[in-house]
Image 1 (cartoon, rainbow, N blue to C red):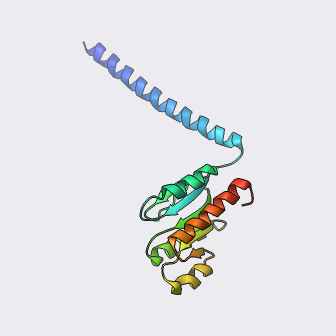
Image 2: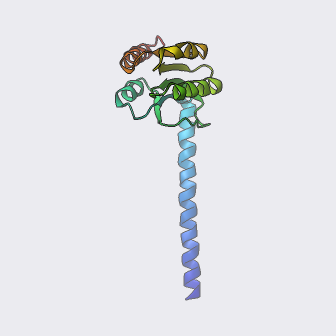
Image 3: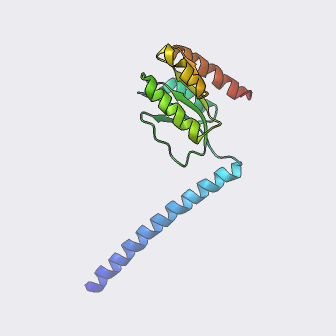
Length: 153
């Protein structure tokens, strides 16, 4: 009876170890595939109060991975952040996000909504392209994704 219990414990431990090993192999194969393609994935960070499906769809069609953020936290695995789009209703939040992304990813294109015209100068100082409203920003992003698809960006 005791030997059967020990054998069962050993078999369960072996099965769990095998599942963990297979997960590691899957991760390794996926990493090798991305290295074989010759480039790391590029990301678009959308900093907003709620998801923007239309904006996400435009960027995903160009081959960029879209990440929606409702609070500003950066993942060290995001090596290639191509764009930041800040859509919060508070300029302080947008400016903080723009400044943080610019310090970690200096080559990133930053686009934002400027809710108060007095803050336009601050956006310009950090190198962000600011729009006066969300509709104007959406139009600009649509043109940007069309350029990206065509290879001009």
